[in-house]
Picture 1 (tube, rainbow, N blue to C red):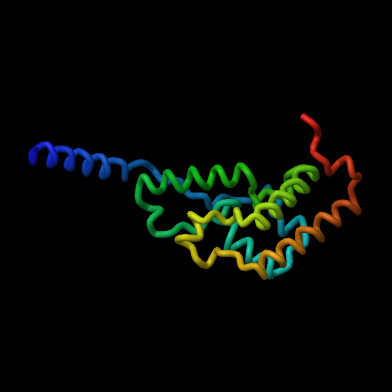
Picture 2: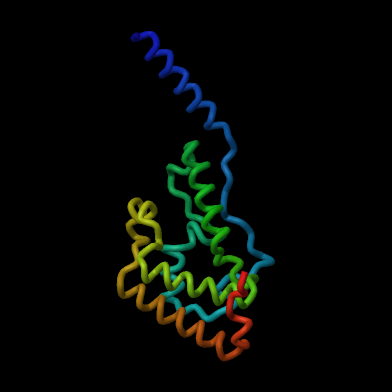
Length: 165
């Protein structure tokens, strides 16, 4: 029995060592041809700081990787999580979205904040500095509402509503 446990341990150790040779991807991409949210819309400094601290690691092309991201399979898991977050919302290319999609994403951000769904608890468990306080939520929601109001002033109402599917 002891030989079996030792053999299994050695196989698992070898697999762990081998998986370290899987190349790691880095999410710090060039945004030369994209329009980040702060380039296309007014983002007050306090809101910008909240976005960078609590959102950008998963929802932009600029992730601050922790030390443990250098270990596989953690790196694969983190990059998959980041890819999913950016697919849903990417602040680095927000201005490239259609006006309809921008308006809709603003509404989704507001809902996520109101329902305490973002940032994810699995993220804030490790990144305590990313927790958004009630005051910060109010600041974010006021900014979102003002930005949405400006959309309503400059774009026809039917260009802001999602099409029926």
